[in-house]
Length: 199
Image (tube, rainbow, N blue to C red; front, side, top):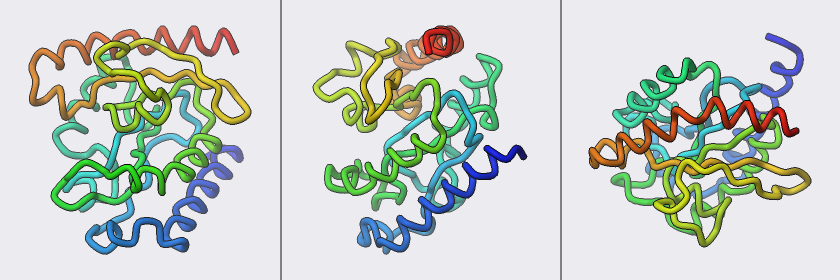
């Protein structure tokens, strides 16, 4: 493990500790088994952000390990990547009861910690999975209009490239979306390459 990787791992662990110490969303924490922080490479060029953990994620303490995660792994493999090459997280870090959508106040409570995660990892692009994570970066946009299109935004002190994609879970229930998501995924390596060239 490189020194930079080591320090990033420690910084991410400190963010996790801060969420627990500050008792973020105590109602969610009370019904959850695990705080699901993130998984993958802290030095990754690509960060995927979903909305909140589901049942499998809550049990294992890892994001995207159920059916949607299996599909995500397949799509990563289709562009010659695996989970160790990227970093995967959610806006909300505890499972909402019965897998309901995260509430606006829950997303708001976790948002500062997500920003800290991105500051530590410093990815080339951020891929939002589903509208819950997209709307925080690209407010007022519709995912059906802009999916797969890179958008450069001002994010704090720096520019950040956001690529909104449909959530893998939605594609599992909607066969038409599945091909759309696979096609959008195929363009990701090129987007990363162009983003790194323009930095």
